Structure formats: structure tokens, C-alpha cells
Amino acid sequence: MAEVNEIRISSSVTPIQDIEQTAGEQDYYIQELDKVAGRSFGGKYNTLTAYTDADIAAYINAVVAEDGATDGLDSHGWQEGAGGPTRGTLCNTVHAIAVEYVAELGTVGNVSVSFQQSGETAIKLANLDLGEGCVIPISEGLPVAEVLIGADAYTDGTNEATVNVLIMGV
Image (cartoon, rainbow, N blue to C red; front, side):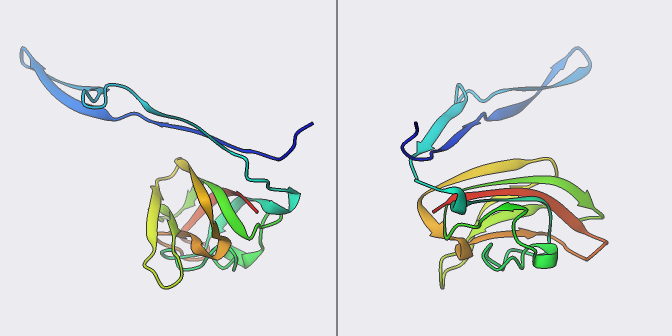
């Protein structure tokens, strides 16, 4: 029997260098592991943040209704229709967020994940292209109002980015 729920995150980064070589009269472009790094870095991050069923929410196929990232996740204004989570209950303090950019209508560009503490300038932590996703652990936790999602462009029915979002915390 588990004593508390656990947030498990695994990630890695692999720096890849583009190299151009010429053999005879042919140009070749090779990608290889960057020699400075020498390997992939990363691993796992497990936190015993005692989240409950009332502290985890998923937005499935949500359309980002923000040009830029100005609304926190608490307002639901970042989401077309502002309907709130597809499943679960939005937590008060976010300890992990996962965002997947799954579809695009028209020309949107990127989807961003940012943090903005009261009175401070927003810090963009991820700028996702279509098909990309990220998981961001937040050890100390942030109020849900300080976690932002935005898109480079939004026009209802013309330019829309669709995302899946998972938020966990307390």
C-alpha cells in the first residue's frame, strides 16, 4: 500500500552537432554526438509531493486561445471556450506540467510554456514546434496562476494550436 502519491519524471538531453565533410567531389552532412558533452545527460526525478485526486488535471485536445502567454492556467482563458480540464481537478500549486503540441490549424508557429511570478517578467521555459512536448518539474511549486501557455498566433477557426496538458501538484 502506497503512503503518498509520487510524481515521476524522466528526461534526457543529447547535443547533436552537424558536420559537413567532402569526399571526392561529394559533400556529406553528418550528425554526431557533440564531443564536448560526450554522452546524453539526464535521468529521473521523483518527488514525493503528496498530490491527491483533487490535485491532478488533464486538458485533452485543448485549443490555445492566447497570442503570447498572458493568462495563467487558473483562469482557463488560455483555452478556447475556457471550459477547464477535460479530466480531474486543477491544483492550487503546480509541481509538474507536461505539454504536448499535437495539432495545428492554419499557421500558428510555436506553443510556449512560461512562468510569471507576480510583478515579474514572464520566463519562457519551452517553445514547442508541432509534434514536440516537454515535462517541467517545479520543485518548490508555483501557484497555478503563475503557469502560462500561449501560442504565436490564434484566430478562431483559422489559426489554432491544439495541445494536451497534464498538471500535477497540491
